[in-house]
Image (cartoon, rainbow, N blue to C red; front, top):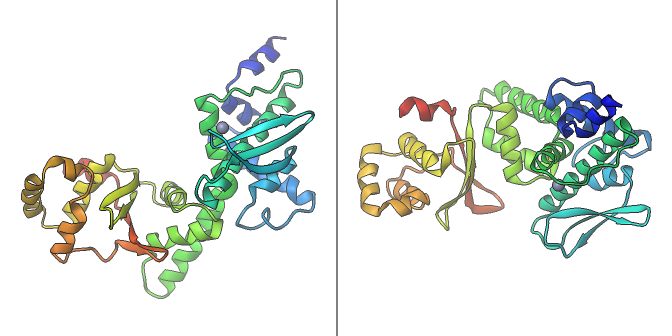
Length: 296
Ligand SMILES: [Zn+2]
């Protein structure tokens, strides 16, 4: 009895570790997803399961959601119960296909966790509460489902080897764009996944050159840190600092002053890659994170 009570109240992460016989969270997630993939393959699924882009709808069906459909929702996605059937719904018109794919994969993760819970504690009713802990875990599972860690590593190794064989160093920015296309994920997700796995000490950001703002940045100590880094790396830092104080702090904080200043000086760095689908967007890789601490 005691052990059942313990299971019921164990955290979803602990349950998942137990179910996959893993001591590390990362391994538990990888094994859960690999298990889903084998089950789908055993049922004869190939496209969307054996090779990318991975189709989260197939996994939803595998886990008992007979339908996956768009709906007018105030949240990104949800699982609805219709009699003894389930369906996955995702917000209609929520932007890109990549966004919807991630939402569906996130709901698949909820279904997979319920199944884990049911298998470990047959008498317990699956918890449908959506705590922050569960949400974070589901995001991680969804990420692994759409862009598996091992495959990101494999892609980067092959890409690096091919670049090195021609005497070039592998281009991270090109890799990020390749991953986004290969796995049909957003550029932001590809960037985060790539940096996390292949460049764990780097940062990454996307700038909108037309609107002159940072669209997003990750693994940098805030936008101001990124701006400072870019100025230090690519501009006449002292001179730009003077201009910086003239233009006012608010604009500097939004990052609006960086690009025009650098452009004016003919210092737009070659490694700032604009994207083929939108030349106003520019992806930047920020060299190792420790740079910020060291130079302060
Ligand atoms: Zn959720």
